[in-house]
Figure 1 (cartoon, rainbow, N blue to C red):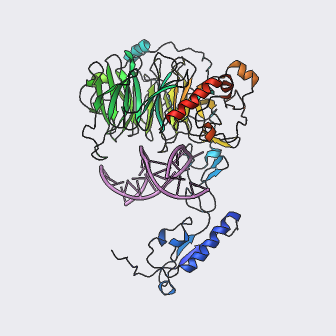
Figure 2 (cartoon, rainbow, N blue to C red):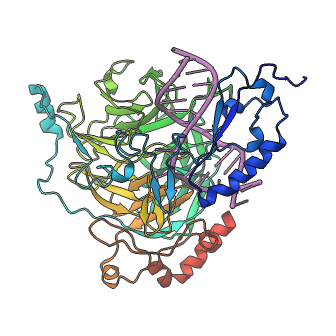
Figure 3 (cartoon, protein in one colour):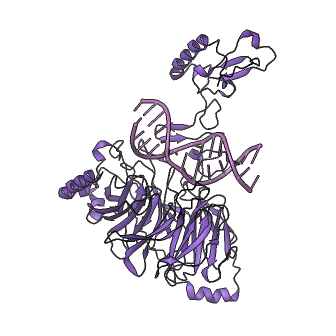
Length: 561
DNA sequence: ATAAAATGCGGCC
DNA sequence: TGGCCGCCCTTTTA
């Protein structure tokens, strides 16, 4: 096709420049001026009107003198411009390891106008970050009877939390794509399961560090959730964006697919179903799973076949999470893209039969009952808030607390999910990765936060100079004081610093734990993608003790990557 | 070193 | 309502 020539006359183009001569900008401007002169005759350029200061000069068309009359001039600004709001006079972005917000936008952290993240009252939420909500008791007598049966005796004095704060060992490049989910083995203390974006399932014996197995042919894309069969420790169910549930025997690696929602393969994005949330109702022997079109499906674990029909539980697309109540598994909690978390009763379920609908401002990444009594609810929403409902027998109209916390969803990350500490008898400690970074002696690091959900207080920030990536996937061990983290393609196991190590303070690699250890410079710019660290590392104290293990680890990861 | 890509969701029409 | 555009603290690979 012949090139289209512009027939209409061109308006005058004004070039706007920074008056203050900055060192860095002068070079760029000189180049622009030269090229403007060379290209005066070009006419077919279409993009003049949308040019911004960042565009290259060859896209500029100044037009000819004859065409200028009668048109409003187009102003092209060559001033330095904010990459967020496109306005001059300020710039957003990293200044060293500190990110400076655009002042024209609402606070990146709490989403309120009038200040930026740097001055946000919720930036360090040790005292703030709690938005109180009314707490009314609206129970009927029957509810109280029910409540007495369910509510355990929660200790009145809160136990001291034990925060795993030191990387004990890690396997770098364990997965070839980012980690999407983690699950501890229900009985074997040193076994961690991990799923990734590629569909691979890893089984890692972190007690032996180098012992891992990767199953690569169970799913074809994202593993979103894994659950052990409660009656058989060997069998793991996994839900994937490939639309299948797999049931895998961890000893043999043999897996079956009790559910496949895309039996006809790829027919385009409008029909492709993905499975996200999954949980197991152990009383009924059912796997509950929900798809990306808002439907709940069930699999009978005894026959490994579908059970019942699909039921619409969330309207606008994806259901992100499902959690069965630990005390009464027929009661379950779902959350989804429709900005709701919903409570259901499996015994009387149909579309629209939810017992409660918990409204959020944006997508709800996760919703969990508290792990012991199942009477509290903790949700993570993309509006940068954790929400806590103190009792499912209380007022469910609004959360008991909203805790501002940076876990804003970036589409390239696995969604953040705040997870209860299953060992905390007071059911208040939760762990969640943080999105925005903190300037840690010159390095921008993203801590993993421990939050007391009963107060909103930030109990600890856990980070390591070697971990520069964001850690959206975290899980606390059901019995031991261990934290497992999935960060980009890496897995980490954190354990509490031993007493002897605390006294010696020899380790260069300081973990920042609020109120416990001071911030100290570690290895400068230590980065997990540095060549020397590519094959995995162990914490320094451990390294010196176990040279043999480390070399095994190196060989192991080399062979497999 | 720099660029592109992989991608989910909100907002806008 | 649906389709399309655009995106603020990524991470990796070319």
